[in-house]
Image (cartoon, rainbow, N blue to C red):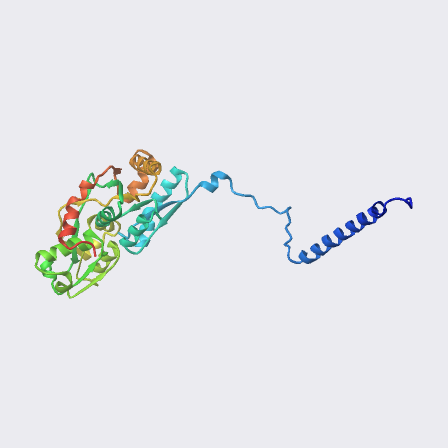
Length: 319
């Protein structure tokens, strides 16, 4: 290539400058590539993990809490079929959540950590009054919506009333239990004393079936338990009738309910209520209810727990 000697200097330099610019650009790109080659990760786009479908990603587990009215092992055995049934009918996986104390279950409900819970009566009253725990349904058992606190002692015990247990050992179930702590404390108050002064030794079993076993084995001289749990235990172990005896039975009180947290969306609440209320009409649901000793679930309101609330107040409230 040639150029005219009389051409302007700028025209004569245009090609060399253009060539120089390309050379400099190539050098810069080469330098950047060298500087980052060791730090940039290698991504193989041929290896891909499929994402879950939108429907699968939106499904969250149904979380069910069961207060330790019976021991954790007993809860799993008793409520596993119910949990499975609800999950299958709702098309959701299920998580059965357990805690050691009634207060811990109430905390789960207050925080909205669970969607549904089976609680004791005083735990409901406490949760309703403190953070708005809501009733959903109640189990109807043997045609009734009531239960009793029953005072039990070893079969060989000479005791015939609470007064005869003064200075003895006593098994409470849970600090928040109505039938297992509040009501027997009320009986002691009627005798002009307190549990701490009245009994020689007290301890907590944190479930009604463990309290029953403590008395049957003469580890405790007495205990007060949920009559429904006692009936269930005696059906499963007829030998208990020879090892324990009932020396006092309370008046009838509103049955332990099924509750939901106040934060549960109304649609979910309505679906759960409808499913539980119609469960006895489904042959599979009826079989699950029979295993729990429940006739059916029915509506219930707060007026069923007026007497319990009053007795809690009279004995000094929840501990």
